[in-house]
Image 1 (cartoon, rainbow, N blue to C red):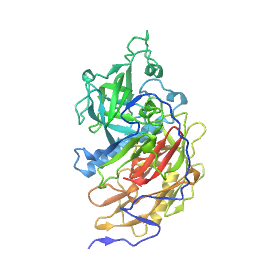
Image 2 (image 1 turned 180 degrees about the horizontal axis):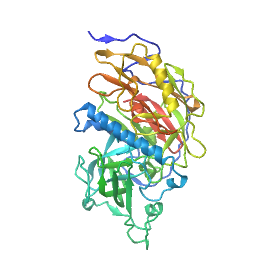
Image 3 (image 1 turned 90 degrees about the horizontal axis):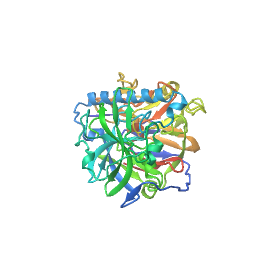
Image 4 (image 1 turned 135 degrees about the vertical axis):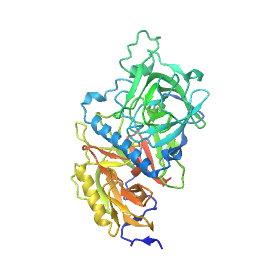
Amino acid sequence: MKKLLPLLFPFFLLTSSLQLQQFTLLTLTPQSVHQNQVTNQSNFSLPIYHISSFSNHTNNTSTFADRIHHDSARVASLAHDLSLPLDRYKLTDFGSDVVSGLSQGSGEYFIRVGVGTPAREQYLVIDSGSDVIWLQCIPCTQCYSQSDAIFDPSTSASFSAVTCGSRVCHLVSGTNCGSSDESCGYMYEVSYRDGSYSKGVVALETLTFGSTTVSGVAIGCGHRNHGLFTGAAGLLGLGWGPTSFLTQLGGSAGGVFSYCLASRGSSSEAGSLIFGRTEGVPVGAVWVPLIRNPRAPSFYYVGLLGLGVAGVQLPLEEDMFQLSEDGYGGVVMDTGTAVTRLPQQAYSTLRDGFIAAAVGLPRTAGVSIFDTCYDLNGYSSVRVPTVSFYFTEGAILTLPARNFLIPVDNSGAFCFAFAPSPTGLSIMGNIQQEGIQITFDVANGFVGFGPNTC
């Protein structure tokens, strides 16, 4: 007979659904500008796949270890880059100084995108912490293994080399262009702190999302690529900078994109990614202001006031999560990081509060970066304390248990999915975002947490 732990209130079942409590609704005014040409429809959606959907890994323990390794690499990179001098974050070329979610952030969520004319489908990692759009291209001097055939620009009627007189070349400095008719011929380079990289040329190409085509998208066509990219062809940057896909869409999407990341182990095989204000802004969403950081203009910062366990806000310093005037600290929402990182003091307070409230939950040894784990082998379900984020404007996001207590092996070990940050920077990772409809209204500067789940 399987065991069931006693109910402790207020708690969630491990399989419970999202609840949003004590939210204040903010009314927004749409605004947009037109740039790229979008055909068939201005609001479009597509499925998001978790890496496990097409990974060849069968050993859950080794897969977990690999993901944590890459996740830690991304966090170290973000922490390092966001502590550098301000001038590092000026846009100097198409991909330089932009941290990708591919190798640095475990890059766990993919979309299916048609590239070129005729469209050839490719898996691209979605990354809200990067502006760059790139994929591997033939001729490939050096390429890693991917699920689909490597894109050959010579077979695409819409592939166009960027000239020196183009808008893209004005965004990219250091191209050494001569006349305006001369091919830009600029070699972009995206490099990562674990030694991974993508190098190639800048071009304009058509991308297809279902029945919607978007022409004239600035992309990087990578001829030299290296790293552990788990089958993806490249990356779709959704950050706040000038070369991200959302910025290039301009008024075609109304400055809005929305995603719902399917929870690990759920019955849903894929989540969804929606571009456009009509379908992307859900009725009943609760909005939190986005914060712009000149030190890191690609990242989406949010105002976080505190954390809570079992419905009670924890005692933390008021400025614990504040973004300083010189651009340090703060809280970044990032699809490329899996595990939420918090400053050491905040993490310790949250962890200790959770342990104290999780009466009767059997402890076990820590695993990897997790120091708080439980042995749930033999249990059909358990009830655990809630964990909440207290945002500005009075918004409170209470997580379902699966968003903070996750399996780490095949033996019933579950760990508290938070970890300390190496600096004062906090990162809200994709595990904590799973199953929640999240909308970025970049045009108006808000992020919304919707009532729908996936």
